Image (cartoon, rainbow, N blue to C red; front, side, top):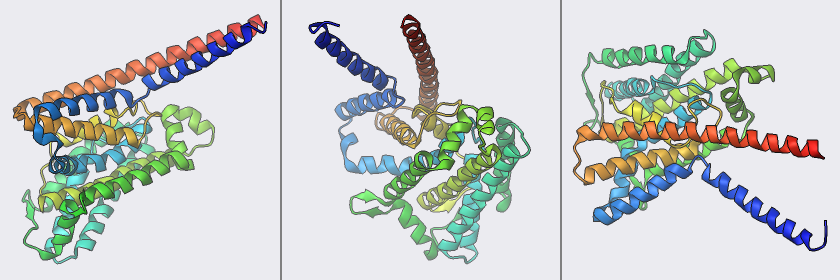
Length: 353
């Protein structure tokens, strides 16, 4: 290589490196949802002046608090290539256990522990059925969806447990609806939960095992990953977040109702998938789930501020979910094609050498 050609080659290498970084950025799993969130926020700030008020953002955060809580557990499950269709029903059932405990004289601490413990138990049942009995996750969690809904109804014969009359319940209500300075208490708790979950996923052997199982379950098994234990664990974590979600939901509503919100499960799944977690497993994380949940909350808030009929809101959520999954499939297909081209180019250069 001549002395004149060397700087040119170095320049081309620098441009190619920068171009490669730009391509990786555009292929990032958060790019689409972040762009959509920014566009929607700009539009709403121009058309709905109240949108930018902090009180409105507090409302968004509190409204989406249950979705974001359940989204943590759902992310763990989806990363293994599964899905927990029973998480909303488990939340309602755990909420009823909390309500009954407080109503019959238990302290708010005991009620919270009962809700969390019951949620963990329900998640463990899912994990054992899927990990040990090898029943397909879709079939098993679809069955437990109905079972857990029945449990919620049977606890009080379908009656709602109103808790605002019990002073010992006030602490739960304060946690769900209170503030620390200008920030909602539930926001600070949620940030802590996401930091813990992200640490587990990215800095522990268990987290690496979750990604390995989702990427290739047989390869993970051959490399020594205890697949059955991982599956049991992620569904148990999903049950844990169902118990935590029950506390948040009961505190916000100041009561425990046995009816499952028909949109809750769809919204939780949408938040996870919109945030870039691959529905086939092995790729994604909690940051994307948080962004996806916030995006859905902003969309919901915008529809309410614009006085759009609630009948259309399900259509909007469904279209967003389909678009997110479709873009995810396209992104993974493009990534595979790009990797194949790189391998062919590398093989060609090695043969030429």
